[in-house]
Image 1 (cartoon, rainbow, N blue to C red):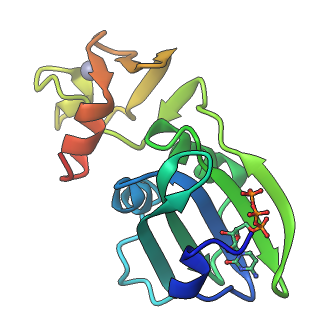
Image 2: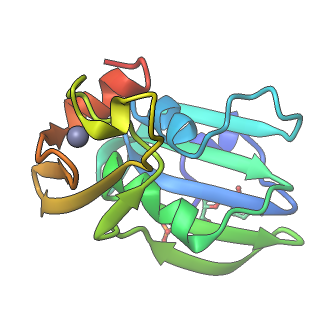
Length: 159
Ligand code: CTP
Ligand code: ZN
């Protein structure tokens, strides 16, 4: 409840709090949600704070921005322990644990340069199927190349 992170960062009125992110992954979570910081809404990051459950954790707070459950579940790819809290008028009105979807579409790029999804002629939407959750393994549905967490980090420039 009143963890030390509360001293660093205030409560928000409306928005989304993504809590229990493994320490050091907050930036990756923002990249995954497509948030660059240039959109205008307020974003707060807390990194490497104490957590009873995880030892240390990161927290991301996004104010006045609507995110769908499907968008938020993508966070599970890099932060499987994360909890999403939807905040309205300072109250937590709903809370859920993120869960890794079975199929990831239009988010990542296949690392195989010869994959049809990387050819200019015919734009094909990326589609990956999750074949393992721990450790994370995604397979490109077009060429079968396996992608891991480190590939996601590389894709978002955070490896
Ligand atoms: N929070 C916030 N602004 C609010 C309400 C809550 O930023 N107006 C944040 C809290 O700081 C916390 C998270 O949302 O990081 C979840 O809040 P709450 O459910 O009250 O905390 P806990 O009970 O500690 O959550 P959990 O059981 O999920 O650890
Ligand atoms: Zn491919």
